Amino acid sequence: MGLLARVPGLRQVPQVLGPVLDDVILFESWRGQYSDNPRAISEELHGRGTHHRHVWVIDPALAPGLPDWVETVTPGSRGHLAMMGRAGHLVTNTTVLGFHHKRPGTRLMQTWHGTPLKRIGFGIPRDGSRAARQAVDTLRHNVKRWDLLLSPNRFSTPIFREAFEYEGPIEETGYPRNDLLVGPHGDAVRERTRSALGIAPGQRVVLYAPTFRDSVQFALEPQVDRLAQELGESHVVLLRTHKVDAGVARTGRFVDVSAYPDNRELYLAADVLVTDYSSVMFDFAVTGKPMVFFTYDLADYRDRARGFYFDLEAEAPGPLVATAEELAEAVAGADADAPRLREAYQCFAERFCHLEDGRASARVVNLLLAG
Figure 1: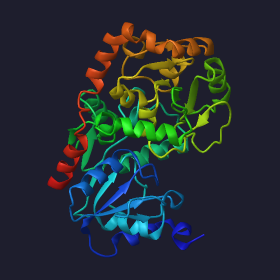
Figure 2: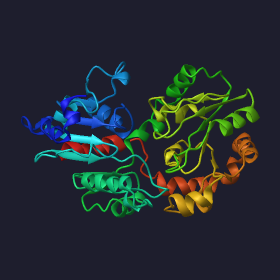
Figure 3: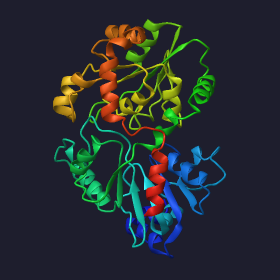
């Protein structure tokens, strides 16, 4: 164990050594991935040919194949700590490490990572445990350091303001990560992704992407296996677990894509989405393709575990089902059912996707360069 890990107070030392470097941008996505909103922002900025250095916090196992203009630091390393203090700009989609020392002259852009259905931030129901208190303290420490918070739509803005108790600037931009979903390269990405996953021409792809449960360990394999068995060889079921559950190896009659590096490519490869309360529903709605909601624990999740910001039963752009039999039937008939749900889908998209026009990355980079 290194000295920095054994003596936590020393972790702030590398952050205050040397001047702040205005041309350096430190990007972080999910504690070590090259993904999500930060990736789209980085690529838009690089495409403009600016002078900035793009330093990414990257798990070494994920470093091969990164663009040659990306510099990397290992999560928790001395280099990571130094860049946390010296980068002129920090762009992240989640909370940064709790011992972050933000120096004068640096700016932190918080992109966040989804439109909220379930309660977030300080609105999450918590017990009085030490872990819960620490989570609240870490979040409060983080929010104080945000200079700009991005909002994907007008619905999210007041929720973010209240849920994070944030008084600083919020900009409604849409989500940069979703630009690809409406851009000119979508068809090519779809075909490339399906080929990489071994999907045969003509097979219908079902993307199953549930959220996590805060206090319950739940087994996904039986229900996903059952769905794949019911749909048969004409379908391929892809399982995309939440980041919290992604470390668990899962096998069955499905393809586990939990470690796949880019959600957007999976959305384009899929023909129908199965989810529950995950914010993937808002991103997938940009594609206009069918969705089915497997909400077998709806009352418990809504009324006890998390709570919702809107009535999913009333506004969902697809059917809510509670049993494995209903799920298979709804997925098999999703295309035929689409005309009946067209008005509900359009209302959903107008409410939550009104800024997803393919230019969100450009709007955000303009903000970054102006700041």
